[in-house]
Amino acid sequence: MITAHLSENEIQLYVAEPQAISKEQIAHIQGCASCRTKATNYELLFKGIGDVLHPTFDFDLSGLVLAQLPVAVPKKAFPWATLLISFLSVAIIVASICLFWTAIQSVMKMMPSIMLSIAGTGVIVILAFQCMEMLKEHQKRMQALLFQKTLQL
Image (cartoon, rainbow, N blue to C red; front, side, top):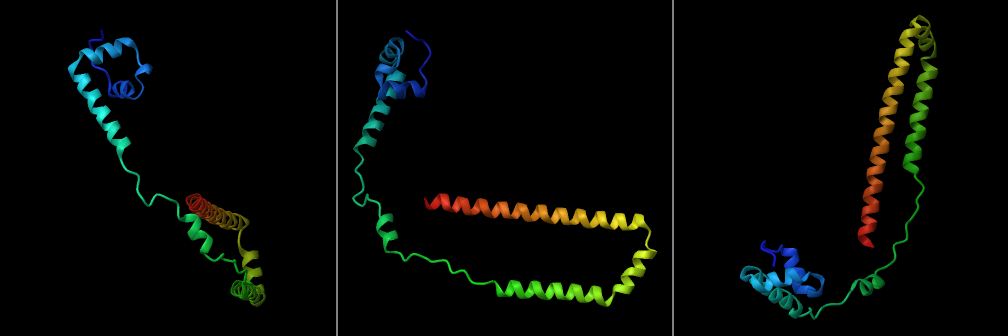
C-alpha cells in the first residue's frame, strides 16, 4: 500500500475512470480516510455537475438573426478629396520650385558637398523611420481586422 497521499488529479482519475489507476492507488484510497473523503466529495461533485438541468433557451439564434439582417454592399466611391489634396500639394511644390529655382541653384553651388551628403542622409533616415512606422501601423490594423474576423466566425 502507498503511504503518501494521492494527488488531486489521481483521486479525480479514480472517480472518473477507476480502471486507469493502479491497484496500489485503489488500495490506498480504500484504506486512507482522507483520500476516501476526497474521492467521495469528487463523486458528489461529478454527480451534481451531471444533474444540472440544461437551460430551456439552449439553441443557437445566430443563424436566424443573421439570415434576417440585410447584406451590406460596400460602396466604392471615387476618392475625390484625396485626389484634389494630392493635386494641390504637387502643384504647390512645383510652383515653389519654379519660383525659387535660381535661389535653389545658388545655394546648391555655394554649399559644400559634405553638407549635401549629410542633409541627404538625414532626409533618407527620416523617410526610412516614417516608412517603418507606417508599416507597423498597417500591420497593427491588419491584426485587429483579422482578430475581429476571427471573433465573428
